[in-house]
Length: 509
Image (cartoon, rainbow, N blue to C red):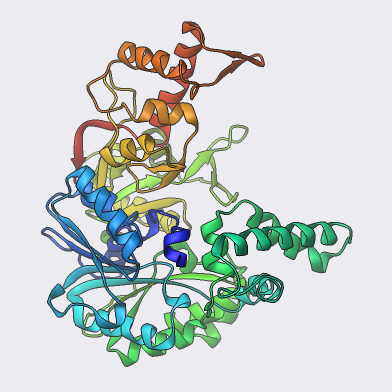
């Protein structure tokens, strides 16, 4: 049995590759998002885990996925049928020979493909962008990158020498052998106290937590060729494309000391050159690069007015012991001294798990008749927070509940994933979240037709079969009080994890 049949790809969604996130980066650099229904092409779509959730929430758009694996395309089509998605289709095809009638797309995405295909397939990717990218469209491609991957490549080098090759064992046997090597290797390294080995030991700890599919397709795949950013940019330029930036906006503005930033600016006068230097200084190992047609005029001068029409979502949490100090997801603390900006951040934090349009933030903080200079000052502050990864920008945002509705409703895709007993489900922010057994038992029934009393009855029925485990003070219980307690905990998690719709299914600025 072939690899694709034996071990399926991880069926993930990639939040940073969502058109709303990509489009927001484009808007900052002068690329206007499409005004009508969008068309999205996913190259290497696997089971469709990235585009099918988007198609569900955007019935007016058109979503096409392409993958070489016929078994995975067939399984993805089952999901399309189960959800009744008339605006999505999955095509089994080689990226080197795509159907000519696909047309043009506003967004072309290829995640986890570029480094794992031969050179002629990489050339074909640029041909796809040249042929199928709409005039104002944006292409996204992710890939392993040097110099950071030289460190991670050590693990791959060892495994390829100690694990049987694809022709000598089945994929399951190779995964088992690789897990054995990693376990023995970790034990050997743990016996040696060395700063030189500490980073490698950390990498082995990380691999112990990854899926079998990741281990197989990342470290045991026959081909895995990390790239230098400069080489990727040269290939894009040869295909008539221009580098827009990175889908991870904050990576374009790394937190470097002032003297380091000055040093970079003196040696790298262009964005492209600076990005290459940043890769070297930060030892970067993975990239998510965005490209547009070479005919698109880009404006690298960031201006606060480019936030108009965008949604703002907080990526910080308050530091309780210090007023107006906020902690980013990477652990960086920032104290905001400007009163208006501090009020804006508090407003966005209170709105989590939902977001607010930029204009509404200005109006609520400053008032609708505030002078332009005050709006500009607040806009500049919010833009700076976005470049630091403390605020996420999107061109649109679904209507996510901020309080528990009487009849909670989750998206159909998440309910299907829970009913299938998958490890995780995709929330309304396009993030795949891990689920426990009780989470799945409840989530599968959050269709907007059930009250909490109904859900408690369903949970009681499920408890008869064993998937619901409630431990209170260490005791396993299935009585009504325990189940009601479990239900409230699950619903609260669903709310905070952005699984629940507000009254409207979607909203726009």
